[in-house]
Image 1 (cartoon, rainbow, N blue to C red):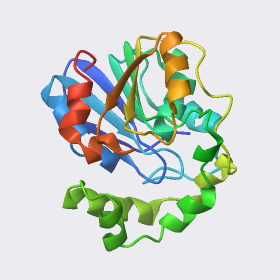
Image 2: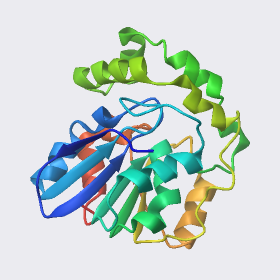
Image 3: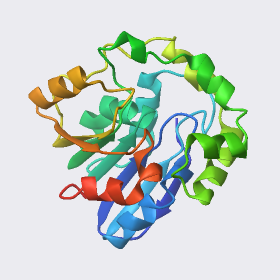
Image 4: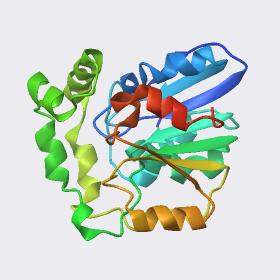
Length: 231
């Protein structure tokens, strides 16, 4: 499936951005221009069922196939957040970027208390401006407006594959390319045991202290600082 894309910059290097569930390319409104200022041509997708991309069946593997169908291979950098991190990890060997960054990726957790019920996502689709602001007190007002706009276009069926449990079986065995896992403090997706296992498997691990799941919106400066040497 060919996905809708948004680009920033015309640099000689290419960076790919893949958003998380319920969102679309607009979540990268500050990251895209920041990377363009560093000399990248930045390409951000809308995953299927999100933004202006087509709808269809949903699974991690299909999200990954769409990335391969849409994005150029051999980019210098690829960043995936949450569901986008999962999709990127399943496509990374075929996309073959020079470096991959997985920002609080939706892989797996050894802690059964961290299971995610898809019904919670569906319920959140009706969130008000006030509720989004209360849940994300560190977001800029523009990010709250982006969240409202992206929720309005989101197909809630994309959450069904979660099935109420952790995404077991998706924790990578090894990095296909030099890879950084960027974690929010107290990540609800990657617990300490899995973070340790990923480190043993050769992934770099950096935690942005004080940041919640959507690190690039919760602490933009901290997000960029934690990527020093990777972007």
